[in-house]
Length: 247
Image (cartoon, rainbow, N blue to C red; front, side):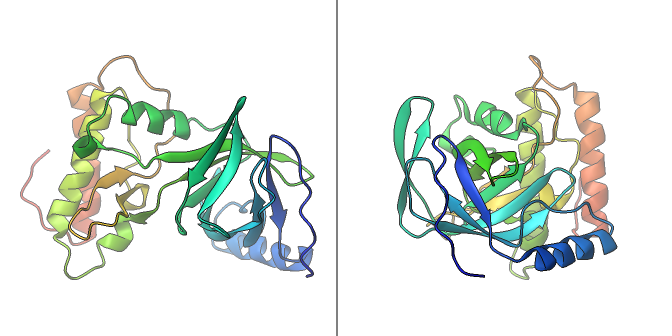
């Protein structure tokens, strides 16, 4: 399919499908055969930011019930976008994650809440690099871009990783999030990850999927948190992660 000039639509992130309709249909049908909901858009998309006519690329990574996730491949090291009435220039890294959903999602709000008044050593979520509305000529989407992370279920397949410490890192995330009124009840390992940084010795465990529950104005009760922790260690046992903790 020939690369058409992207349509510029002021204030929106422009999302353009790359594949032909038949290819997209087959892609969606394959997902249905695997028992998953159909993903949004197409396996590859072209991405243009507001006020920036540079065309970047998004490559499909995965999707859940509501969100579809793409890996960003940037044409340049910076891009320009409009945040309200403020013009901003953002630095970026290939591998940043673009999330797309049809409905307004609470995840960026939760991620910002978790990072508020947070020391560098207590980071619980990836940084939100961009948030806005995406438009593909037919419909609009809620879009946000976060820093790169390696999902925990992939980390746990590495031979050199101390798996028990990795899972304890997930426990720490869940406990500190609970202290800020955030429930992480869906504690599958693919909802957590390790933040990618330039420091090979630095491995911050963070939350990748914050779920859809509202933020409470109080701490999550310890009894409720312990029930989530027990679920986590049950999953850890099934994944062959040794542990010496009782919940």
